[in-house]
Image (cartoon, rainbow, N blue to C red; front, side, top):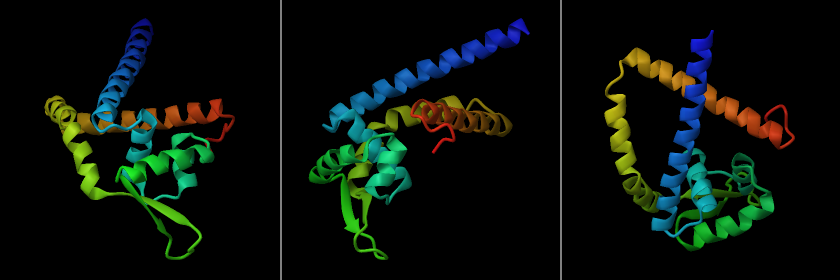
Amino acid sequence: MRERRRLSTGIKRALRDLSNQIALLNHQVSAKVRLKDVDLDCLDLIAQHGPLTPSAIAQRAGLHPATMTGILDRLESNGWVSRDRAATDRRAVLVSARPDRVGELFELYSGMDGSMDDVLANYSEDQLELIADFLQRSTLAGGTAAAALAGNPNGK
């Protein structure tokens, strides 16, 4: 029991350390492309899950919808995203990442991606499946905790 608690504590500490290192990496990437950190976070959400409405981006980012106007204005004026009318509802706006610009980000993250390839090469497929499961469950736990703090105990 004591060993399990020690290992669990070490894993939680390692996750916090990883979170800090990724935040530092993202901050450096933001500085290189002259974006605010929150702008980069939103651009990443749009690139991963887009096209999205501004309100969907705000919800995923945990931001007030009014805040999205300034973020999207900056991203659009710097050529990172485009805003287009939805085909089914001309009143709705969908935001998409511009593929020609997102490639710049991939290059900035290539050092981390290469390092992660080296780390992952040391694990078997079964171990990689276990790690992927752990990370997915940890992500869900983080989302649930964030939603609860925001006053949405059901994660919505």
